[in-house]
Length: 405
Image (cartoon, rainbow, N blue to C red):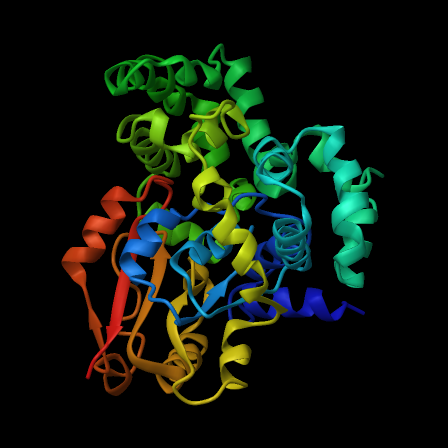
């Protein structure tokens, strides 16, 4: 019998009304999604915070994922962040980050733990400073073993960002690229954006014309490592060959943002954050924000729950900001209606909702009843601008809705 966590993931992913082949793919993705998927979240928190306009005292409801954005939102001084996730590994990672922010002795140890994430000193710091203050479920997760017998906490000694479903996917992409005589790390040597563009055009763009690459990326299961289920694959492709879509997204990541400002590019091409005091980092890992994150970390409430269920258990007019990442791409019409019914009920005056989609357009028109959708103002021009400036470059659209009245 499937465990409760596994049933929750399956319920979110598996389309029971789909054809048998599609259901089998959905179940395969649900199985892959059981372990750690994102050691680092791939939504730009700087764009998020500008769009959300978080005010001191706001209550935020968000999907947690790897937690980078959850803890970055603390820099805006909200009263509480209720973070939910169906993935038990993500819940354990967020609980670890919260305990580490509060209990590690200084910024240097916090940065070493989550920015470098590859030192044996981190394991010693875990035992001395974090373990005594970590909840039992999370402690069992980190001190347990992965599928090949490694203690999970040792990932912080050997390179956390090379682990998890996404880390393994990027590692496989690096291996495939090197087999085809392309070294992804070459981009990190670029001195400016012009050189980044030259490297992309001469080294990376032709990679996506290889027959094997085009065949592999045409398989719906090929993007499981990006956390993209079969239901989202078609939206991402938009009727185009997936290799062409991925080339365009990689071009944006490679060419539209200076490496000095884009830690997503460092993760993609270097499999970790850059080194040195000037390396780009998420807001929660930046030295200037350390004291604020440390002082406010316990404002994060981490729940192993579905967003709709969490909101259904909350009071009327109880939240100011909502972040759904790209989870709505996975949802049926009935699930979308249930979610937005609870959002509208729990939203305070001026509430904002931010989400991303694999395709460019918002997915809500035509799927939510007009009586529900008309309660919200879609900021189309702002959304296009946020999409353009999202440094992760992986999504087709970033969308902002604001409660009317």
